[in-house]
Image (cartoon, rainbow, N blue to C red; front, side, top):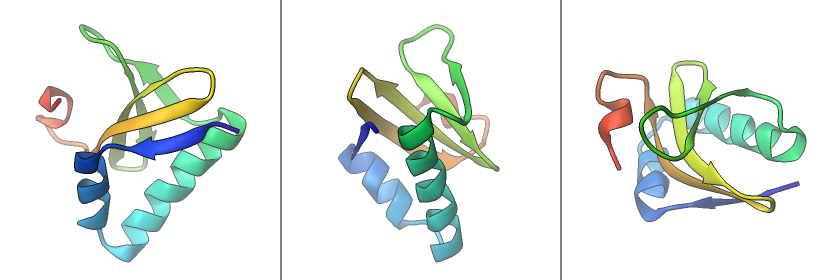
Length: 83
């Protein structure tokens, strides 16, 4: 199991969601941290990965023991331009 760390901006993004959306994203992140399963792709043009959880995206970096969530938000045309 990997440790999940949220940046300050990712934590603020997550706090702004409704309770149901927050629960959906948290369970998707925990599932990925525990099993490695999820819709994950490497980002093009920069380092990092994206995890798709329904209509939400988590932009993150990872190493052997941690997942660092950089941005959490709804899929929009500006999702991949932040950070």
